[in-house]
Image 1: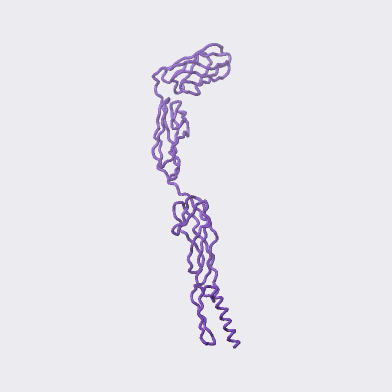
Image 2 (image 1 turned 30 degrees about the vertical axis):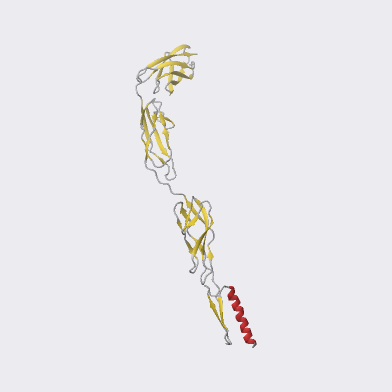
Length: 313
């Protein structure tokens, strides 16, 4: 009698433990001295301890904005399904759609992979893993070419180009002022004398295309004979004996650095800047020269000339 009661107590304890796991207990209450307990339901054998899975690692750790990233992992054990969860959407603004990872901008986010339990193994999760998304690679623009390659001294040259791609702003740069002494204002090219300079056109990047630049391009400026005669209206500055001075000669139709001659012997005059209506002249006068009133004669290459008085002190 005592052994039968002890046996039933053991059965009840086992049944209570099994019920705690959610399994159904079916007991045969016949008069048999050894009662039978059946187990119904459940994916794991309650009489066998489940085993930990191998380490699980998220392997899809980089992508490009605009392209869905297939999520992958390695490791784990058994037949449990693998799922993915975003821990932090981060600077990339990540989201999972249709089993793939997308990003709204370049940056990073953090994900965890989880492999479910099965009849033998416990569930396992990877460490939180950073996924990096790079910006969309920009496309190379079509070839960019400077088309405004010749001009006339004294006339502003509008700079133009062809080619390039996208909506980037077009700008122009003088890379070498050259013999024409070129400079740019906005998209207009100027030259102070006949000759050439080197210009490059640039087109900025936009959301689709990278920046582009043309080849270095020579722009030639020619001097056109001035039909209107020169006019010298005045001179500013004193010339001093035995010294070098800078003076200005004012007038109209000065082009391509005219030559300067003086009526006083021992005078050396050189135009260093030609602004069209003003000449900046460096004047040297030797020691022992006389003071007084003299004349500068301004002469163009086409032999047009004009004269202006100046003082020597």
